[in-house]
Figure 1 (tube, helix red, strand yellow):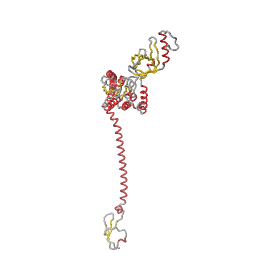
Figure 2 (figure 1 turned 30 degrees about the horizontal axis):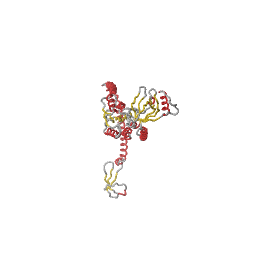
Figure 3 (figure 1 turned 45 degrees about the vertical axis):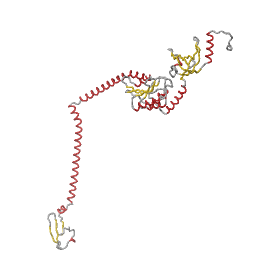
Figure 4 (figure 1 turned 90 degrees about the horizontal axis):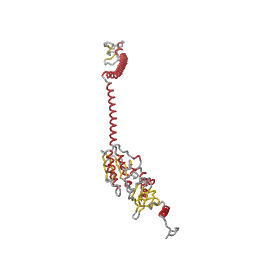
Length: 401
């Protein structure tokens, strides 16, 4: 049966039928979404990427042109299950049809990304990602710890970079499962062990590249919290540069790749030697200058100059001593003179009040035979014996009247 609108027994050329198919496909299948598995992933030198999308029963060729390829937020590879948005196109020279992909995401990634964004907002609200919590990486670490798979590409890259930059650096591998069930628990356990035993100066936590699902353990809440709580400065090195995980935000530093993490953590041995030489020269110069200054100072201390300096120090002290001594003697003499005046005054007062002085003026003291002083004639009667004491000697008398 012929298609309505087409004349019966019409003969088409290959170009005509191809153009017709091209018009129908390209106008009927615009902005379609196809989900399938990537196969034969082939980037070109021009930046375009050619590949095949397939499922169990069919396959379709696909292309991502350079502009769209640069906007991909992950690194696709063979075997990835993806969801592509684009439009169908017919390539006439080969008679093939294909999908021109405008955007691509990992199949099922939409729900995962939404979950990660919600978790990110929650942890950020708790302050786990605050810059104020970030620790500085030590400039000259002695030991680097690496929490990763002992058989993965990440540890090989880290060891290669470490050996190249500083062969004397110690590297401790803390083996962990980095994807699938139980991965988050082992990662947390290794971080805990490294901190408990203080095994290293810097701790690298990460793995090589993978799909969004492969990297999920490094976005588990327990791992993010363990990285944030680490007392050892941490570097998150998960996947390739376009990959990301939530532990990137809680770590003290984020490295785009495990190799870059090693570059951050391990100082160049040549740089260390250069710095040591610089420090040595600076120290030598400082010591030489100090010795020179000390020699000049000591040179000025010859016996003659020392005596002059001693005299210069001694003379003011001697002058002060002499002045203090003179002032002290003056004060003592003035005190003695004042005391002598007071003594003379008191002596005069005492002498004037002395009975002997009174006697010397012609007065006498009269007492009866009992020694009682007679002050009135009424104290005696005739026949009373009296003793009269003048200035010198004694007179004995009897009252007759």
